Length: 115
Length: 117
Image (cartoon, rainbow over all chains, first blue to last red; front, side, top):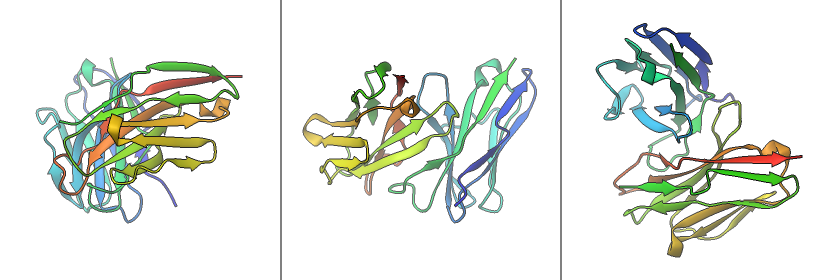
C-alpha cells in the first residue's frame, strides 16, 4: 500500500515569493493533516481536514497561509508571501477515520528554505 | 493542556548496547493514546506503536519494547542490541481519546539517537 505522498521534497525561494505544497494521502483515509516542524522540535498541527471540510484551522496563520482539499483527497498548502521564519519542514499526514483514535501516518515532508 | 516531555535531547551509544528513551506526559483526559514515531534522516515520521490509557501491558516487538506506567505518567521505549540503522530522532506523542478535550497529537521535542559502529 502506498504511503502519504508529498511534493516537492525540497523548495528554496526568496522571501515574499509564493510557494505551494501538495499532499496525496493514503487511499481511503478521510482525515488529512498539515503539520509544521521547526528544527529541533516536534511537529505542530496547522490544519485538519475531515473529507473536504477544514474542521480545525485554529493554528493556521491565515494572513499568509491557505489550504484546500477540494475533492476530499489531495490537498494543497500555500504560503503567500513567504517570510524568512517560514523556513521549516511541512509534513502531511492522514488517518482512516475520526482523528480521536486513529493512527496518523506521515509523508516525507517538504523542506522549505526561504532566503 | 497536554504536554509531552522528552528530557533526553541526544543519546549516543555503541552498536549492540541497549538504550532507553524516556517520555513523560501530562493530560487531564481519562482516555488518551500514546505514540512513538521514528524520524530517520530522510525526514519521514514512521509510526512505531500506539497504546491506549487503559492498556498498561508492556509490549515487545523484536528488539523494541515499551514500558507504560500510568502511576508515573511515563511511556518509555527501549531498543535492545541497538544497530546503526536505529539512528534517528524518536518522538513520543499524546492525543486525547473519546471524550477527551484534545484530539490533536501533541509531540515531545524528540530524542536524537546515534548508534555508532
